[in-house]
View 1 (tube, rainbow, N blue to C red):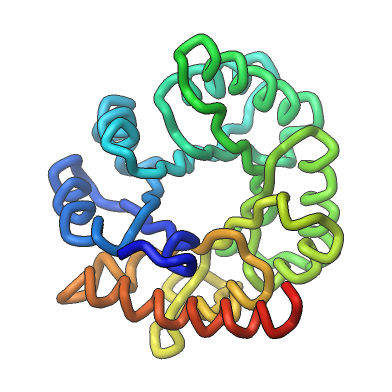
View 2: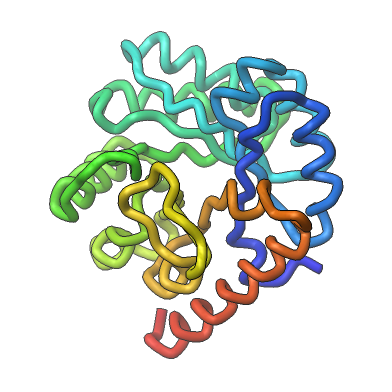
Length: 238
């Protein structure tokens, strides 16, 4: 059953093949509404798998972090929107014109394909890299000015971003690990409860679910932690 807290969970399909992705979706679909497809799976399977999962009703976050000249990114955004994804991302460091071009082209691409326009997210600082709150909040502000719907940022910066933006501005947070889990190659990690309580719109979880003996049970355990965060968030008036 998809609960309000569960609706904030994005499961990263960082697997080597379409068959592995489909298998993971199949065992988690009762609890997970959204899935992330990144460079590994997209390079292996291409846009057909993205379209397939989107057409099945799954919310797809295409995580390719576009960063190029504005025209090139615009055409990539246009093609992405036609796939039916729910959200995709571009690097804020690519500049105002690049982000704005992606936003405009994605809306045009969705309209031409009869799709719902995807949310455009600006990548601030990768969670595998060091970064200051001031740096991330500044990049988030630039993303908003360019028309982006939200940002990808560490949950540690989410409260400061949320303070500067309304609830409609999306904050998608990778680097999420259950309290007892290792941080792997992420530097700025946060628990599911902390991320949701701090203002995250969505959290991305990968290895703690994928590598579990029972991925569905692991997803449900993370959702329980997220529900704690929802309670804390409501208690704080968020």
